[in-house]
Length: 290
Image 1 (spheres, rainbow, N blue to C red):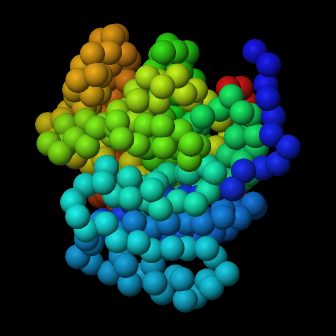
Image 2: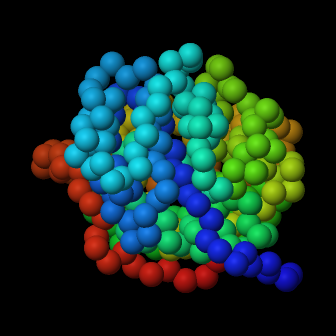
């Protein structure tokens, strides 16, 4: 396959949906504004938060006037999907990144995203994550990277983006904007749904191992019943779209397999006191291969 490379780097917007994230949003914005290549605009979409999320973002704007941080409100409907969509619609960049409000971007995230999107064959991009509030973070990052590479190889028809660490071309978003499911009953994985619609338009999802984002493992604190409901979203999303059922098998099996040991580690950690939200290590391991 011939790689067509653009003669310039694309502009990048970053969308951060937020609901009651007063404890985490400042750290998220700090990591996003301390990139080796600045992000062109950072959009926090407040979804009717009842805490000080919006006030903290406004204070961050005042304290960092040179950072292109925008705060918009999405109050029409509660949920990640309408909040994400409002941010994507408001973005001005040629490439739109998306992370969660408790995510911490590695310092070279924007540089890697820009350089990969010079490849005109890439319509969307995803990368590995480091669980910053778990032990053995570097090992966890390498394991996550290997798993995502495996899933990319197995699911060639539906290569999925990870909602906590993704980017797509604004043109790709316009192509699927009116088709992504609104999921008002909150049954699906919204990022899997978005990935399926990208595939239906023959839009290519690439994988960049050095597009690293730190995320919280707090979902592992959930009781097994609640965790299982989260895992079953794979099945519900793929089957609602009449996709091949083998697509749901591997991610579900892995998530069920890791729960007992990692849930135990989270519980042990909690007994020794919760650790504050911290930045990623200054030197994130360089991962190779795509």
